[in-house]
Length: 391
Image 1: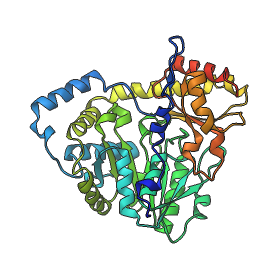
Image 2: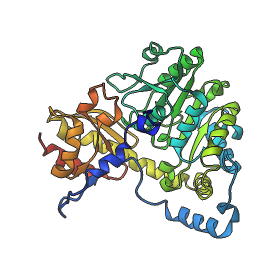
Image 3: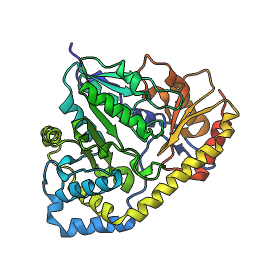
């Protein structure tokens, strides 16, 4: 019997991890520490919610279909801010708004690939990217990374075949948190251009990059849109996770193809979410800078306090944006240890096996910690619990 598209991939990892909570009680003195998901749990800031309430009440178009490629004013604002922050030229016609960044990736792949094509992705990878490639009949080609969890363009070149259609990178990275150097991204751009394939760069976490100034100069290239497809999410910046607003920045011809995909899936992005994102871009710059400082402080707390775990054989492989990626010292697989940590330590995190193909074994020694929703005190508590748990 033929296998359906959805049956060709694995179950959603975050939903699987939540099932580990079933039947487990957490005493008052040790409440659950949930570091499994990289999404803010707090609502948008109060001024944004007030503005959104006014939109619902006063703007009738908030409740209607809109343009498939998104609110023109939001597309223009993205283009304006991107041109300024990256030191290049991005026009509104090169920006499309999507129903979250996952849809941006799905739409891009739909325009690039057909059955049996290949996409190169560094491992560990963002599992939803792998899931969509599976369901599209596209082969995921894993690219090993070095000790700093940074991929190498020369290594990727050896993996390119006549079926390769794109290389997909995430920076700052999910799950590792590492920020890819500008020269690394430029090297991948040059490789992709030389081979006539696309370079997809998912910058969902760009607002929490630790570097000052532009993280890369890809948009400074006047011909950037012959190769580059950039993805973005408003969810992390403005806590709009439930409103599903993302963006894809690419050539006009690419967006014409993406429009076909979007029109048959959602028709248009969420109208309220788009208006909220636009309001946030225009009014919450100072607030967002404060959010970035807080995330960078949590990153510093991870790096400063990790010695407690390092003394017991743990290794911090990567840290940045919302993530810390760690190697544990135990003989058992992280896939088996993660459910035990829920019961034994009151910690819900994701095993590295969820970010790797099943035939690659490194993930069994690794965990991802998403620290978007725990502060310095919570990070200290996390380290204490992990250091007291031995298998």
